Image 1 (cartoon, rainbow, N blue to C red):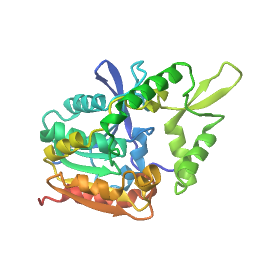
Image 2: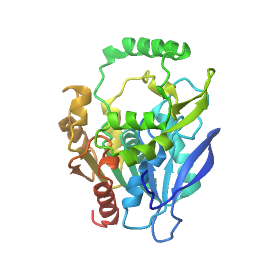
Image 3: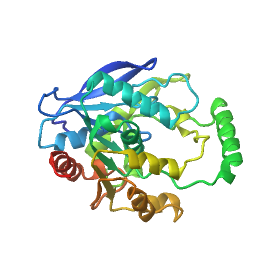
Image 4: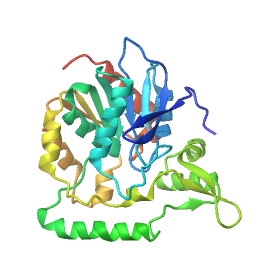
Length: 308
């Protein structure tokens, strides 16, 4: 099992009628603002442990489980919307940082949230690191009728119990699933993550099943179309310096088969007033698992840089 170097502690914070679970490392310091780590889709805050352990500096680190993930309630909803994450983050920063601008790192969905939030609340973000948070391919208005229909159809499937997440006979099955999804993940890290990513729940028949700590409603598509012009307006409103980090494996090529490419994402980044891009070698989409030391170094050097 992976040996944790910097143990976290759990706190629960009231956020918009939800009981939000937040992992905390370190203690507040007047010398440095909080470092806020935002996990991706179907992930949990504990996923940042490897990066936190690799940091050279002791930081006050705040990492929430997004609504409907990990130990944070979902609020009995049957689908999730990007604006909710933005408001949730604002509530959490009210609690942990007050008026102090924070350093934000987001991975995947968390990176997309960080970029949008940086445009909505530019005064609250000192520096922003986006790990593989590429946004979505463009959608045309003509796709709206089919999109809304697909959303309704998926809601019906969810309510019929047809979109449940996979369950496993034990945490070893969860670890195998994690390693199958990410072949670079070592056995010790997979075993540790499995215990954070799932929980044993009794079944109607004898025995327990280990279920992923994620609401199946997250699988429902967003009914509204992703608008590139809106994303670019949010990017343009970001005041903080931005570091965009991509892994050497081409996630976009794998997902979208040419419909949306890394070059397209780089073109969108031209709307950000102060941005640079880095690449992490020998890493896939879960680069904070694959190369935590390299990711930690990139984060710390960028946060410490006082240049423009």
